[in-house]
Amino acid sequence: MTHLEELLAVAPSRISEAMTIAELDALDAEFVGRSSAIAAARRSLGEIADGAERGLAGKSINQIATQISALLDARRSDLLGAQESRRLSEDAVDVTLPGRRIPRGTHHLVQSTMDEIVDIFVGLGYTVATGPEAETEYYNFTALNIPRTHPSRLESDTLYLDYGGKKDEVLLRTHTSPMQARYMEKHDPPTFVVVPGRVFRSDAVDATHSPVFTQLEGLAVDTNITLADLKGTLASFAQQFFGTDTKVKFIPHYFPFTEPSAEMHAYTNGRWIELLGCGMVNPAVFENVGYDPAVYTGFAFGMGMERMAMVRHGITDLRTLLASDRRVLEQYR
Ligand code: DAH
Image: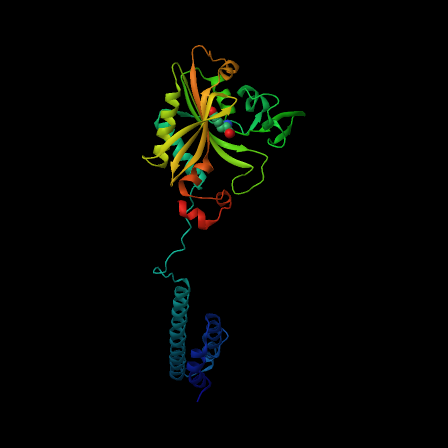
């Protein structure tokens, strides 16, 4: 057996053992490359003097080279095919797998309650305004006829801000009522406005208190507005929000900015429950904002959104609304 025939004998098993393209490239160089035994044999053909003999030798070298090249090519295409199918299977996407769902967000119950109540008043012809949460003592108290000595002005009730060096001038509004005065200063009657917003009090959190909560203020001013308008409007609100058969009653109360003043109670879930404060706008407030109390009358009301949500849904602890517990939130999508 010539040297090249020996090569041809070992080539198939060596080639089939090549597991990578790089290994195969090395074999390619070794078997048929420029410094291979085959290339050397070709180069030494010139040393054979006899033409016929040289032709035969050349033919046999070519045969061996062709066979080895064919083995290399076949192995190469096997390896490339395997590489490709490995890549495909690694890239494979199982389109039948269920996707990862992004949980759907939702408004908090207090926000959706507020949106719904605002909508009810918009339906009754009211516009919507908002005011600052950091408020001056003037709008929060003085403009609303709340006397200098009123206990609600104390630091035990009101959170004062250290703002601009003037003590006790700026505070976190304790109710949305200051917007009554701000709005009337800027708008002539007829005035029909509701003001949703966050309010702040110096209270610790418990089942019925929170230092931050949400109110909706309402104000209606025109010529000839009467207590009957107040009662009709607020009864209509209660029936739209709590159900058409909701009964309401008005119990005399005191607020400095309304005269007379009342609490509206509603009969829901088998009992009477206090819902909101209201009254006929005190002429002193009209004087403060430049409305002529001889010409205009009006009513005002203020209600807590957390309270409305709690009454409607039978929630007994305010902290339920503060905790952001998904088990609670998901019930009120
Ligand atoms: N501002 C009152 C409070 O926070 C609620 C209120 C009562 C608002 C009577 C009014 C009103 O407009 O007329 O307790």
